[in-house]
Length: 217
Image (tube, rainbow, N blue to C red; front, side, top):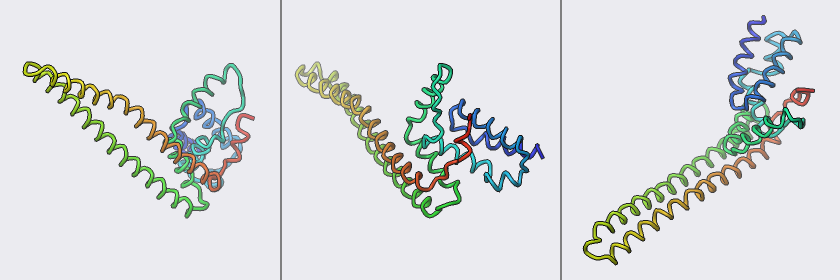
């Protein structure tokens, strides 16, 4: 019987991979003790907690929602808490984890399906924007390179024309360099908006794991 539970836990641990190592290890140990010490059968575990994949996805989503934040503030816990907060700052990753958690929940599936279509639409839009902006930046960089090369090529024929071409090429390359952080900011901003929308919807649909409120208590 324990071998089946251990297999369940091994699968469960694999699907906890998106979590930071510290939280992942603590969560795994908590459920390991819960299952083994309670004397639950594998059928009872499946009935109460669903499959290991669904349970892990719900927990990952709970983490991305900020429902598993540790209020303990000690010298020992501060480095891990700072690392966890840093890893939570990626809105696209957090939104994806929340989406998977909603889909792993048996309740309000129609809402989850609407969420899928909305999220996919956002992803497609962002990919289109990224490709369009990348194309413009690559084109500007190539044009700038050609203008600089052309400027050096005509330098013997006319210094003024050469300087104009070289200056225009440098300006084009400078525009590309300046635009890269702007593009990154736009992508991040769209991801943050999507994350906030998904988090709002998940707050009404996602199951909050009640046993996690007692983890570490």
